[in-house]
Length: 302
Image 1 (tube, rainbow, N blue to C red):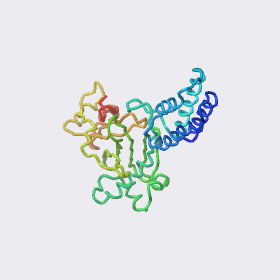
Image 2: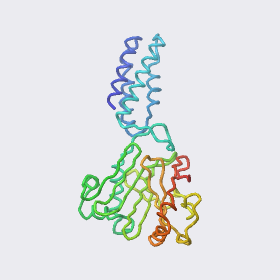
Image 3: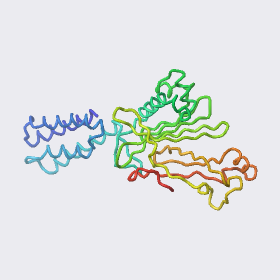
Image 4: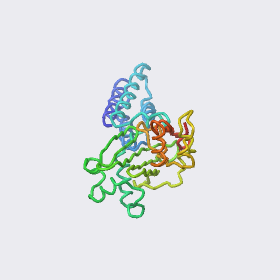
């Protein structure tokens, strides 16, 4: 971020030398640049507003138009290059805004882990063995992600705020992603699943308070419900073994941050029976992709 401050100051000095602006007048621009650096770190000022600020401060006094444009191009290019270096990323389609600060998914995971440790005794059914094992080992969030004996990290992407990890000694899978609504605070969706003797699937949505702690949103209304037949592949009739069964639905964040994948599980007995009568149960059912609708803050049906 210091790079574009240097470029801004250099451009102001260049303009001052060429147009006769007293150098003491550039102090206001320098002060604004330093204040903007602090505010920009919190995501309060966007790059284009910097161009507007500098342009107002560089109102030319006899400076040729071509020179003014050249200086402005230099400043804007410097701001964009510095923003890239500071971790500002392009947002995938379906999220609001053209540019937002990259999501530190480590911080979100640390907040989730702290929430889980405080809630573990009251609601043990919400958490996977990988969380229990880490707590028993006295591990903090950083160690949990780094210690291959506690968990296997499958993917971390700060560009879209995505993390996926599994238990080192079991089939548990924890997947989380941050979704940005057009209005309101970011939402963290956490999907937990473990399939040993049957599948146990759980999904929760959190928001983050000013203190940095997570708050559970039980009535978030972000996820649609599905009728069992919606998971059947086109042209496939409902198998007799699935009739009358209400499937469990696993909502798992997509790695690209654009939405979720919803998968149905009709139970071991029913799916085993279908496998015996069909080639595979996968030939009967299909996952459904849900796209993040930032304007309404919900996941939309395909």
